[in-house]
Image (cartoon, rainbow, N blue to C red; front, side):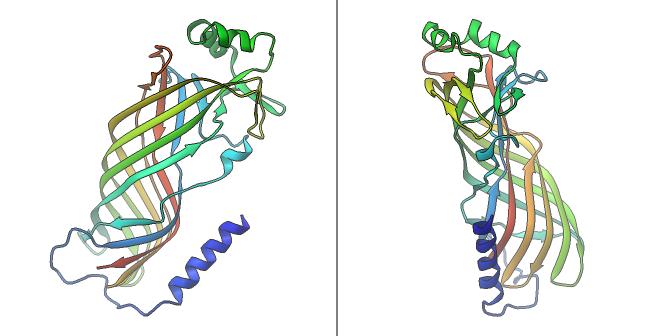
Length: 289
């Protein structure tokens, strides 16, 4: 946390101590494809769940997010540079514009088992463990879990997304250059690539430790998806040459849904993945062209 605060403080100091900027929100009226380059301190807030036919409630067996697991509380930082497309004002308080998040990667080791939580330990619930034993594990893996009363399944995840969206929204203008409570909503087209390596654990603790971690298989998929994206920004200062933004969140109602993995060593179309894309931006500064 101290490292996080120091980085935010340094970025704010560099922004506020930089050269002066103009006082107009609007650049000259010529058409342009890119408005500027953004520097940001932003966390990847995407979520990935793996499950057994996970459209059915309660069938999630692994998740990249779990407040009970220590290492899953740490933020995944996003690439600190991004391009910004021009925003078009439709009135003094409404806008529209495009947004792009290119090749953003979420890496999670030792995903959290979902289903049962006892003091210090996590594992899949009994019905899901039975399904895995009867329909997924081979004889070697069944031998591994034999006699282990706390065995659990975990996974190491690499999840990469690119999302292009278009928003319509509104904000509250404070002055010509200052806005608060900016909200946008619109459709987005995305492309996701996911790789998961599955492991058996003799035990999985809430510290994120997988004891006797044993690899069993690797699954992959790559697929486009269509979603509805939402954007919220607490504060913006827009001038002719720059945009300063504080506290923004961008997310999707859904990313890739019920996508079956292609496993290397077995065929199990029932093991699927759901995902939601998103980012939490603490501070950003855009140099406008």
